[in-house]
Each structure stands twice: as structure tokens, then as C-alpha cells.
Length: 255
Image (tube, rainbow, N blue to C red; front, side, top):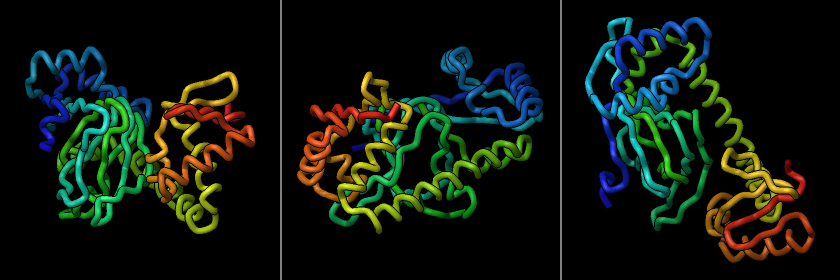
């Protein structure tokens, strides 16, 4: 399936007077998301209506591509050469790997405010190390590494925030490796449910936090079959730790 069937993309360029103001605000207040400031509802409407290229106050061009995706749309594949960086404006995505038979394992979820595809920024010619697929309807901004490097010359705080995200992801990866090594499948599923209850798309419930996820997807996170997930969810339900009805799971006592 072609990528173009999954999303619509337009050039995202801010009016010069707005962009200059944003840069001043960003420098004054420290770490303010430049892209978040650029991609406001008003700015986005202007960009969609005009689709023109203007210049920022420091004289450098900033051209980002605004992408709107459907749930389960593929943003990029592992074998694709890394040339651009993504920033999640709205929604969440799944980062996953596949084996030769197409079996998937979900490494993590990324949400609004997260960058994607940062590894190629530090090593030119690098191929993508994973697949990224939209978990929900998403809006993302895409910018070339070249343009991003120009951007961080003006505002190095953005690079610091990106580095902080990378450090946090390394910590999450270390925890996941530890869980795979030291927890049995029941422990891994229980820990996964607790982690999912902290995700931005989890909803409050009188008894805890409510999440929506399939048994197959839980299996892809912890590395077991859908049937095994079903049995363990039933056991956790019998222990009055959760309630599970279809894709809806309430994790008790997590608020």
C-alpha cells in the first residue's frame, strides 16, 4: 500500500512576523516548543490557505511538512534511509520491529510533544532502526535534518529537549529489557497494564484508569501469544485487579 493513501501533506510555513515573534519568545522563556508555537490552529489555517514560503527573523528558511494520518497509518519503515525528523503535534504512534516472517514487537509508544526519527540526525546515511505506525489519528510535522540543524543553531534548547527525550527512551528500553529478562509473562503483562494506565490516552474511571488495547497488541509488547494474554487477563480479573471487556480494560487503583 502506498504511503500517499494514508496521509495528506501540505507545506507548513509561518508568516514572517509571527515566526519572528516566536523566536523571540523562545529565546526569552528557554525551552518553548518552536514547532508547537508554529503549529497553532491559527497558524495552521494560515499555512493551509496560503502555502507560501517566508523567512524567519534570523534570515533562514524553515520549511516543515504538516502530515495528518489515520490510525494504523505507517509513517516510515525500518529500511528507509533516514533524512527527516518528525514531531508529534497530536495523537500517538507505536514504534515497532518485525522479524523476517512479519511478526511484530512493539518497543514503545510516543505521544504529543515527542520527536521521532532522531538517530539519523547524528549519523548521516543511517537507515531507520524501526517501523513507526500511527496508534491514533495523528498530526505530525516533518523537517529535514539540514533544516533542523539550522534551527538548533538559533535555539540550542531544542536540542537539549531532544537529548532529554532520548535519555528517557533509553531508560524505558533498559526497564523493558529487565522485564523481559527477570519477569515471567504474568509480571510483564501486569507491568504493561500499569504503564499503559499512565499514557496520555488513558481515561479516568471511578475504580482506576481505563485503557483500550487488543490482546494481540499486548502480546506484541510483552512477547507472547494473544491466547496467553487472554488467560492472564482472566486470572488478573479473577484476582480483582482489573476488569476486561473486549478492548476496554480498567486497571484498578491506578489513579
